Length: 280
Ligand code: PAF
Image 1 (tube, rainbow, N blue to C red):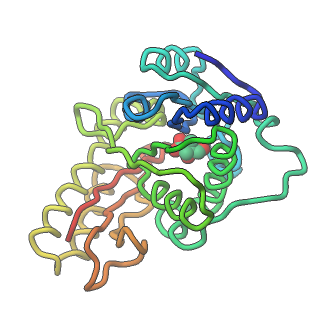
Image 2: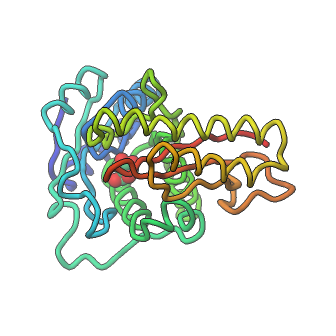
Image 3: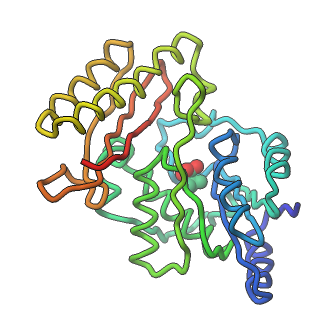
């Protein structure tokens, strides 16, 4: 497995691969890899000649009051997991390699990125779309795999790729859960045992709301409110629970078909997200 720290070297290598006719599958990550990430690497491994994984805790997608400094890191563990799952190339730059000190260019998607996490984390998606654009230019992938735990991120990247004509196919991959139903996240390690048990209320309440809405669309607002109340009752501090049309990221209208029922809530100081995507 090759490890690159410099973007210029990765780009040169990737361009050579492309010239020799190899397909490149790409999995961008912030490291501290878990089985959810591994499922993305497995998908890339099945489809590509060469699998590139980036490991980079991207500072531009964190606001100053967020957890950039304490975001979990385990580079050696990550490398071992990537090797086990057949990744060919790791790109792990320093922040100073990724961003020049006088960098003044951003990539921003301005519609799908605004509600849900975009409302409570206003710099988040601009940081994501900027770094993912840079990573696409460096890794030159034919396709990139994004997990649907952050489904909004996946929709935003799909729109960015469409709008800016990136020659990259975006492959959404199913959200992966622990046996107890908690969506896998690198941030789960912050949770105490008690917070973790309480946090299961997010998935449970979304599932209940989803069943109610599928059975009777007219109870959508009540079901969303009850889900938020259930998370609060379990000791969570709800950031949002909302249902939106997946294509517009607006409140579902009469023509809406595929919707996302999404939640973000704090248990202790840990912010967790989860969602259900379904047809009305
Ligand atoms: O989903 C993530 O881990 C990050 O937002 C990403 C896509 C690697 C960009 O930093």
